[in-house]
Amino acid sequence: MGPVIEQIPAGDTRPRLVCGDCGFVNYVNPRVVVGAVCLWQDRILLCRRAIEPRKGFWTLPAGYLELNEGTEDAARREAYEEARATIDLTALLAVYALKHISQVQLIYLARLTAPAVEAGPESAEAALIAWDDIPWRELAFPSVRWALDHYRAVRDQAVFAPATNPPGEGGRPI
Amino acid sequence: MGPVIEQIPAGDTRPRLVCGDCGFVNYVNPRVVVGAVCLWQDRILLCRRAIEPRKGFWTLPAGYLELNEGTEDAARREAYEEARATIDLTALLAVYALKHISQVQLIYLARLTAPAVEAGPESAEAALIAWDDIPWRELAFPSVRWALDHYRAVRDQAVFAPATNPPGEGGRPI
Image (cartoon, rainbow over all chains, first blue to last red; front, top):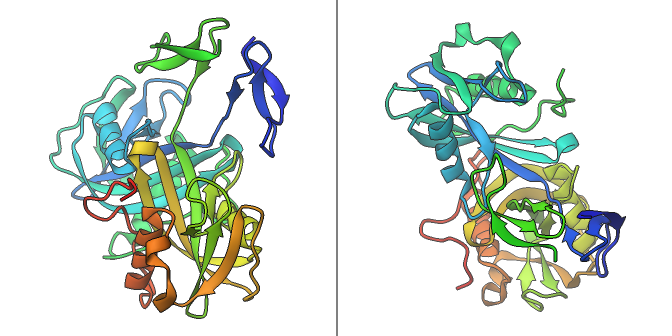
């Protein structure tokens, strides 16, 4: 039947989903998303999503951290997978907690090593976009806007603390 | 049998463990550990572990982020669970990637709101320890030392970037 029975396993303190056939306990944990605000001069790399959720909307290159992968490696991998971009990370820009979907997002600041970008398989388009041309009303997720705003706020600072969720914002779609 | 067969599910790109009886796919993801270097004046809160792994060794209050929990909430919860301490977070001190165990650690810097600490159920002892009295040879995990060292390096700075793994250190026990 798969792990569909909710019970507290021996030695545990919280209910987990257990398989009634074999006793397998499905420990579900929060997931880590890693992404980056990637710059070429003053332009920002955005990708238009070719897949759901939010197909057709613009996002930062970002995705799930894989097993046995470092967070910085994941940021570089996603930039390449989604926009064929190679990047150098310069700082940790933000750590967001999206509690309602049990997601932690680590967003880095990075510089492209070359201005050539191209849509990967999960993107319909990859583009280097000037601040004034950012499609604010067509961003895929609230945290994309948060990260862009925080980049704007700290762009002239040599050292800064990573941002957290903006006050009162949990990350649910508006 | 539970999810013990390694295969690439339809629409996926990596092998996952699948149950041969029911087809359940066990998506295993990296886990997030949240902890804090907690200060009372110049003293640092350390807990002696009452449980394996590394029972009897000293650690920072830290533990797994739970579902639907914010990372800052988790740091406060762990300080209370392990040392009955209430804390105010002041900064993100470090983000460590322990690739060999697929773990991301977020370590905050915090101040105790009162100097009363007491061992919780997973601690044999909780103590406020001066820098010169830290039991360096009895620390539970490499990342405890990393976080203490980074705290020492940035303690006089109003703003700083969070640390990452020290050069060449992946987090395997030494």
